[in-house]
Image (cartoon, rainbow, N blue to C red; front, side, top):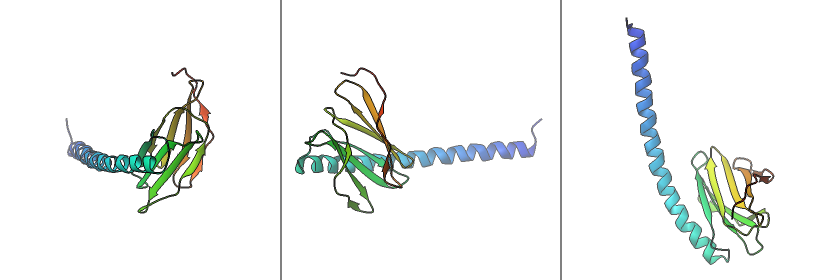
Length: 144
């Protein structure tokens, strides 16, 4: 036998799921627009400032921050951050890499991926809020 409380609870849960799905769709559309804009700027920056044309970019919705990564002439990973309406200067994330770079942003953290000369996959985390990098982590593998 169903009580009024349990029916109200089920209705409230269903309503919150519907609202969460609507919010997710809205955020996904906003993110797609940001990513398209960022990709355009990333390619312009990488080509005009003398960096190798292997950029990667990501957008962190929590901090409204765009990040762009590329391999520089010194084989290190270089990055720029777009926040509060301005691009930062290029800064080095270090290393000596021969492949392109990949990145992913989530909840204020950037996950930076790159393949080494030995074919290993490496990972490094960047905390957007305090601007700090963790050490490189060798995830192993044989990627050629």
